[in-house]
Length: 115
Image (cartoon, rainbow, N blue to C red; front, side, top):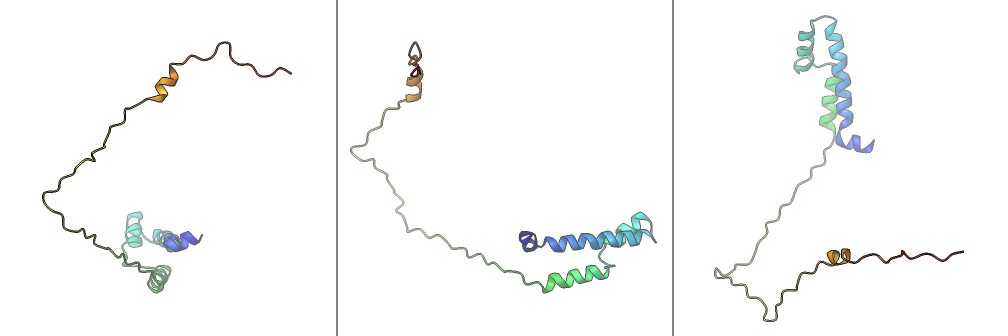
Protein backbone atom coordinates (compact mmCIF):
# COMPACT_ATOMS: atom_id res chain seq x y z
CA UNK A 1 0.00 0.00 0.00
CA UNK A 2 2.87 2.34 0.82
CA UNK A 3 4.47 1.63 -2.55
CA UNK A 4 1.21 2.41 -4.34
CA UNK A 5 0.94 5.72 -2.50
CA UNK A 6 4.57 6.56 -3.17
CA UNK A 7 4.12 5.93 -6.88
CA UNK A 8 0.97 8.05 -6.99
CA UNK A 9 -1.37 5.17 -7.82
CA UNK A 10 -4.00 6.61 -5.48
CA UNK A 11 -4.36 9.57 -7.88
CA UNK A 12 -4.74 7.16 -10.79
CA UNK A 13 -7.45 5.25 -8.95
CA UNK A 14 -9.32 8.44 -8.05
CA UNK A 15 -9.01 9.75 -11.62
CA UNK A 16 -10.39 6.47 -12.97
CA UNK A 17 -13.38 6.76 -10.64
CA UNK A 18 -13.91 10.37 -11.71
CA UNK A 19 -13.79 9.51 -15.43
CA UNK A 20 -16.15 6.55 -14.96
CA UNK A 21 -18.64 8.76 -13.11
CA UNK A 22 -18.33 11.53 -15.71
CA UNK A 23 -18.81 9.08 -18.59
CA UNK A 24 -21.90 7.60 -16.91
CA UNK A 25 -23.40 11.06 -16.34
CA UNK A 26 -22.56 12.22 -19.87
CA UNK A 27 -24.13 9.12 -21.42
CA UNK A 28 -27.47 10.13 -19.90
CA UNK A 29 -27.58 13.32 -21.98
CA UNK A 30 -25.28 12.69 -25.00
CA UNK A 31 -24.46 10.06 -27.58
CA UNK A 32 -21.66 7.64 -26.79
CA UNK A 33 -19.16 9.47 -28.99
CA UNK A 34 -20.01 12.88 -27.55
CA UNK A 35 -19.95 11.51 -23.98
CA UNK A 36 -16.46 10.06 -24.47
CA UNK A 37 -15.19 13.30 -26.04
CA UNK A 38 -16.73 15.43 -23.29
CA UNK A 39 -15.32 13.15 -20.58
CA UNK A 40 -11.72 13.07 -21.80
CA UNK A 41 -11.21 16.42 -23.57
CA UNK A 42 -10.16 18.21 -20.35
CA UNK A 43 -12.49 21.14 -21.00
CA UNK A 44 -15.30 19.83 -18.80
CA UNK A 45 -13.72 18.65 -15.51
CA UNK A 46 -15.99 17.50 -12.72
CA UNK A 47 -15.53 18.54 -9.08
CA UNK A 48 -13.56 15.33 -8.35
CA UNK A 49 -11.20 16.04 -11.28
CA UNK A 50 -10.59 19.54 -9.95
CA UNK A 51 -9.92 18.19 -6.44
CA UNK A 52 -7.46 15.63 -7.85
CA UNK A 53 -5.62 18.37 -9.76
CA UNK A 54 -5.36 20.50 -6.61
CA UNK A 55 -4.19 17.50 -4.58
CA UNK A 56 -1.50 16.61 -7.10
CA UNK A 57 -0.19 20.19 -7.13
CA UNK A 58 -0.14 20.51 -3.36
CA UNK A 59 1.61 17.19 -2.87
CA UNK A 60 5.30 17.71 -2.28
CA UNK A 61 7.38 15.85 -4.80
CA UNK A 62 10.82 14.63 -3.87
CA UNK A 63 13.27 16.23 -6.24
CA UNK A 64 16.17 13.91 -6.82
CA UNK A 65 19.00 15.64 -8.54
CA UNK A 66 21.39 13.30 -10.20
CA UNK A 67 24.93 14.41 -9.67
CA UNK A 68 26.94 13.31 -12.65
CA UNK A 69 30.62 13.22 -12.09
CA UNK A 70 32.90 13.48 -15.05
CA UNK A 71 35.60 10.84 -15.13
CA UNK A 72 38.99 12.33 -15.79
CA UNK A 73 41.92 10.21 -16.83
CA UNK A 74 45.54 11.31 -16.73
CA UNK A 75 47.09 12.06 -20.11
CA UNK A 76 48.71 9.06 -21.78
CA UNK A 77 51.60 9.03 -24.19
CA UNK A 78 50.49 8.39 -27.74
CA UNK A 79 53.07 5.61 -28.19
CA UNK A 80 51.74 3.24 -25.56
CA UNK A 81 53.45 -0.18 -25.64
CA UNK A 82 52.41 -3.18 -23.59
CA UNK A 83 55.22 -5.59 -22.70
CA UNK A 84 54.68 -9.11 -21.41
CA UNK A 85 56.61 -10.23 -18.31
CA UNK A 86 59.80 -12.16 -18.95
CA UNK A 87 58.57 -15.27 -17.07
CA UNK A 88 55.16 -15.43 -18.78
CA UNK A 89 53.98 -18.97 -19.59
CA UNK A 90 50.75 -20.21 -21.04
CA UNK A 91 49.21 -22.96 -18.96
CA UNK A 92 48.06 -26.03 -20.91
CA UNK A 93 44.34 -26.46 -21.16
CA UNK A 94 43.14 -29.56 -19.35
CA UNK A 95 39.59 -30.79 -19.55
CA UNK A 96 39.25 -32.76 -16.32
CA UNK A 97 35.57 -33.40 -16.94
CA UNK A 98 36.26 -35.27 -20.17
CA UNK A 99 38.97 -37.33 -18.45
CA UNK A 100 36.52 -38.41 -15.74
CA UNK A 101 34.07 -39.69 -18.36
CA UNK A 102 36.68 -42.10 -19.73
CA UNK A 103 36.84 -44.10 -16.49
CA UNK A 104 34.53 -47.09 -16.21
CA UNK A 105 32.50 -47.59 -13.02
CA UNK A 106 33.72 -50.37 -10.68
CA UNK A 107 32.19 -53.80 -11.38
CA UNK A 108 30.29 -55.06 -9.41
CA UNK A 109 28.93 -51.89 -7.84
CA UNK A 110 29.99 -51.41 -4.23
CA UNK A 111 27.49 -52.74 -1.72
CA UNK A 112 26.60 -51.29 1.64
CA UNK A 113 27.05 -53.19 4.85
CA UNK A 114 24.48 -55.94 5.23
CA UNK A 115 22.49 -55.95 8.40
